[in-house]
Length: 544
Image (cartoon, rainbow, N blue to C red):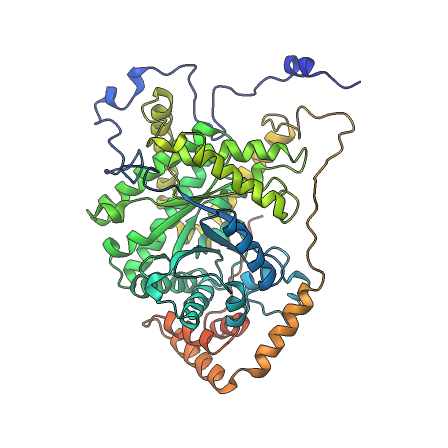
């Protein structure tokens, strides 16, 4: 016999009510004696002022709401374009492009390993002609576009620049973001290609190039999100992300960059999970830590360079395939945390993303979640609505302290690049993931509908199922071959030869060569192959 709701309430209690999921102590009550003002450290300051604890803009969302994006891309460029146009018609204010695994890994559609994965978890973008189809009828000078891509990020960015050229859109009008964070790929996702240090060169070159030719575009989004989904706690996510951020800053400086200039276009990207107050404290503490690092470590007084600008995903591994409609509630709570934490860009996962590509219905519902919170809830009316809460200020301070401790451990090891090359950071994240799995399996971490409050013989009801076009793979492969057969082969060879020669030497910026390759309709696979000839491939360190 299944237990009643009342019986469940009596038998299931909240495990560890005295600490957050990151292990930070939570007092029963926090009073004014624990606030920053009481400790005579100057309080938390004002929004728009250093160290930006309360937000980077004085008026918060009053001037404009955060950019609303929905991560989308599947099958062919035409199908993805149709979804983008639908979402824009529904009030979405920015695009977030998902790329398929072959594109992420630098494989062309005719590669044997690629064929079965074409268009499955994102859209296939092997060459400029596909990019042109993807954005057909969309004004690149008016829409902000985010690309979730890393190993081939420089090529995709070059392709986007070339696409703007084809459309007659001035490069300096381009806005958006390329994720371009390879360090978290080594530790959390696995779509790396080249060894760490040449990959860092490629990222630094794309940052410096973008600063000059597309100054409104964010050439990197340093992403803790994937480390969080790989098993990190909220505090670890922020600490490891900021440590990676320092590694990128140091690399760009070494290649001649001016921190006061390029730091203005650095952005960050995180997941938001279910502990609302911990998530808010994470963002408030992260803003403060980053501003102080830029000011104190690099001597930069320009407040625009000190600003910690970030986007978020609400969902990810916090969602479940069990009782999937519960995910609508989870995403709404996480969106509230993102907004109260001061995010500049938000995309909300659809309730069915735990097990499939979102349907048009579920994607629209996820967008409506943002719009209801933005236009109806009142949360956006005032800046930092939780600021001044005794509990939130105390938790922000505790979070900052632990972030700094974890970053100090990475510094002591030799920095993020060495920690990743040796596999040290990967091992830390794997241990956190194992602990989270044990906590869920052992009911130390409650997930409603999954390990508590389940019904007997519970049947999952996922609702509408998404069906990928079975002809997508063949369509992409056939069109790819047509491009290869009809392009100017001499121009392709010339551009690829120039890229290979430039990659053999460390002095020059590789981005102009990649843009030339894209204009010649060289493919992702061809560009990657030329760089592999010079750099080789990354081999993951193994710890037994």
